[in-house]
Image (cartoon, rainbow, N blue to C red; front, side, top):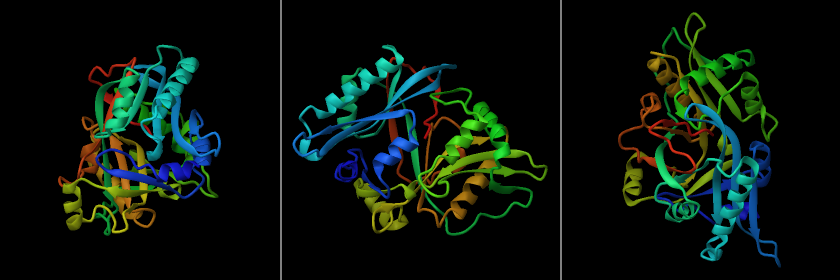
Length: 332
């Protein structure tokens, strides 16, 4: 039921995109989001699922302190059943659940694709205000490797290094809001949590000739779980696609989700080399690397999105929480 609902209800933003699940979507949501819970709307007589919404409650950094935070996502209503109050009731259920679990003053946050008027209108009903924006860069894998740097080595991280990587992540995101602090064990659990016989999440690091870790990033083979079908693009994006082929001819994006990126001080070149090398090494695992980030931080300088690439923008809407100009970490 969820599979049919998602596939028939593309996102209403500037880019109309719907997921094509390769596995049971209910199983993936339950097993890969242990702190989340979902609610569905169904037709009583037939059991058809016509709406769904998710809420995730986790401790995140807010103005330098850890506090419970509720993240709302995946609000979807079947096109044939819209404008009947279903979205409002799903939203109300999530808000009531979050407040029951974490208190009436729990910060509530949602990331909404810019241009998705329906979702923004629904958010305003629960008192949300737009607090900022994140960028989403979808960059194709590359057909040729970057020029090799002999003094740097890129490899998958060892389990004995997870604690060190967690420390690097915490240092890198110290001044960001909505960041979830890491531990070595927490990183291990996240990497090993999989629906398959082998992990689909991996962590890669770059080290110098003295074995110092200079940069790192996580990659999730998202396309093993779900691919994304592009139904509509803005006119400028369609015209550009004829030239640069951002979207494959079949309209299917096989995404690799990049997250948990960090850079040691004064090591921007190393991080850039890691990014470009992974674009090459992962060319057979997917068609695109997806990276979400605050445009005010250093990550845009790492990935260097091409000037002609359309800017995917996510509005950050929140209730009981103000950014006060701090950067945002849009965790996976």
